[in-house]
Length: 407
Image 1 (cartoon, rainbow, N blue to C red):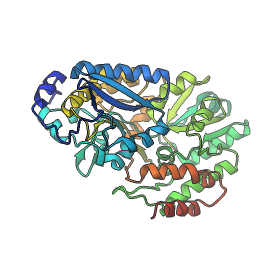
Image 2 (image 1 turned 90 degrees about the vertical axis):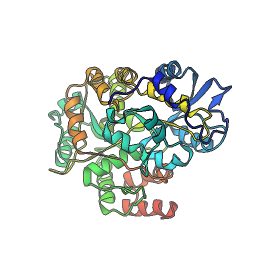
Image 3 (image 1 turned 90 degrees about the horizontal axis):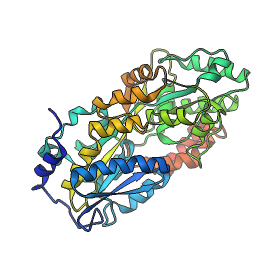
Image 4 (image 1 turned 180 degrees about the vertical axis):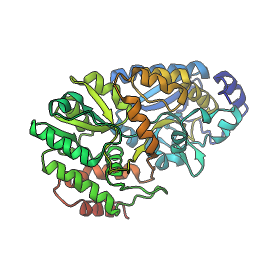
C-alpha cells in the first residue's frame, strides 16, 4: 500500500479529532505549528529548517523550529509536555518514548484514517517508537550501534581492517598492536545508548529489560564494564568523561583514540572532520554471539497540540521518501523509510559501510525504552566514570545507581 499524499492525508484527517486540544502553543495564532528538535550546530539548523519547510508546504501552516542542544532538550521537553507551552510536533528518541508517552498523542487513529503506510518503514524502527501497542511517533532514522575506526592507525600498527563479526579477542589483539605504536585503541563513554550498546555486544549484558524496567544487577553488565575498565587501566582506552558527552567523539576525530562506538548518524560527521581514513565495522562480540542494539528517532504530536491533523500532515511530509533521502545525503540520518536507505549508502563514502550495517542489522534488537531512561542517563553521567575508569568495581557502582533510582 502506497503512502497517500500529504494533501490527501490533510483532507482525510480534517474531520477528525481535536482530541485533547487546549489551544496551546502548538498552533500559535492558528497558522503556525511549533516543532521541537535537538540542534547541534548552525549546519544542523539549516538542514532541519529545510525539513520543516516540507512540513509547512504539506500542512499549509508555518512550521516553527524550536532547537535545543541535545543535553538540554530532554529537560526542556519534560517541563513543556502536558502544558500549553508544549510544541505541537515533538521529536522523540526511541529509548525515551516510554518516559514521555503521557504527554504525546497516540497516532494510531491518524495513521488508520489517512492510510499512512507504516509498512514502508523499517519494522524495528516503527516498533521502537510504540508503547503498549500505541504508536507515538513516526520514525525518520534508525540504525544499529557500530564501531568506527581509524584506518590509518590500524594499518600503521599492522592490524588488518576488522571484518564485520570480529570478536572481542580480535579487538584485544588489535588494541595491543596499537598500544605498541603509542596509539590508544578505544574512546570510552558513559552515555547510555553507546555504553549499553557496547555492553550488549561484549557480554550480552543489559541495563533495561524488555518491559522497560531498569535492572542493573545482570552480572554480564558488570562484566562488560569491568572489561572496559581493564582497557582504561591498560592504557588501551580513554577515560570516560561524564560531563562531556562528546568527549569520545572528539577523541576519535582528533586521533587520540583509534576507535569509537557510534551510530550511522555519526558517519558523515566523522568523515568530514577526521584527518584520516574512517572505517566502520561491528562492535566486537564473543565468537558466534554477535549482537547489537538499534535505536532511532521520530516525530510525534503533543497532546496539547491545537491542530493534530495538520501536525500529522506535516509529519508525513517530514518523513517522506524524498525528505529522508535528502537527510541521508546530508549525512544526518540513516533513513527509517527503507526506500530511502540507498541514498545513505551512496553518500556514506566509507568502504564496507553497507556490509557492516547489513551485518549489524541482522543481529540488532531495538534498545528498550524506559520511563526511567533519562534519569538513568543522568546517573550514568554522574557515577559511570567511577566504574568505566576503574575507580570502583562496576557491580558496586551499578548497585549505587540502582539505589538512586529506587530499585
